[in-house]
Length: 251
Ligand SMILES: Nc1ncnc2c1ncn2[C@@H]1O[C@H](COP(=O)(O)OP(=O)(O)OP(=O)(O)O)[C@@H](O)[C@H]1O
Image (cartoon, rainbow, N blue to C red; front, top):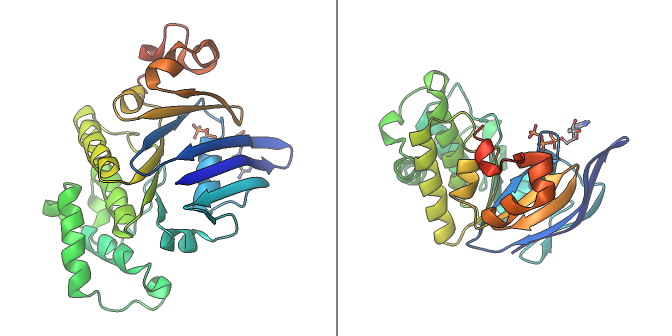
């Protein structure tokens, strides 16, 4: 279980995250939503280790993560994706996933690149199948369409065998069909016991996937509950979803 208590991240005078507390259990899929600048990405960066929180605690299965670097968090089973997919463009799709599968075992993989082994090949191919990328295995990442690149980033995150998956705007820029496929995949991962936290502006991807929704406004949790519950919340409607309700937003 993820336990976030009174998380604070300030940048000088900017209170990007200002006392956020929540829990996330294995098998739960939770959306973190809110207007631009609400603090969602900062919150993610604190959870994944890119930022040190100004205050507060982040515990995963009882272990305090605050001082661990991203790679150490990965070894604890915490993986993330980014708004703009972060993959190696000089490698093929398969090589990206193979490399990611080996990183937890040898973090120096990038600087001391060794031949990728058969075991990682088979595991990577299984992940490419899971994410619908098997036919693109040998393609250079540089020439991949945007949607495939997003799926590849997910495959890369899954290669580390995470138990907590942090997805930063997984549906951004995806066509409707691609988005539906991604939602099915993430739902399956949660059903198999993974804890999933994702940020999203696309309300279809929130309504159709999240067991629970956390709404962040100006660095604070303004509401939480089911999508229906937060859609009825007057503050959330006024500050984010618009008075006509959630249907107004299909970013
Ligand atoms: N590295 C930084 N230095 C200074 N201020 C920052 C930094 N990162 C974020 N901020 C500020 O912190 C606040 C929260 O930003 P953040 O990117 O976390 O919001 P967000 O909810 O993810 O927004 P979006 O939906 O647009 O991605 C904003 O006011 C932003 O300008």
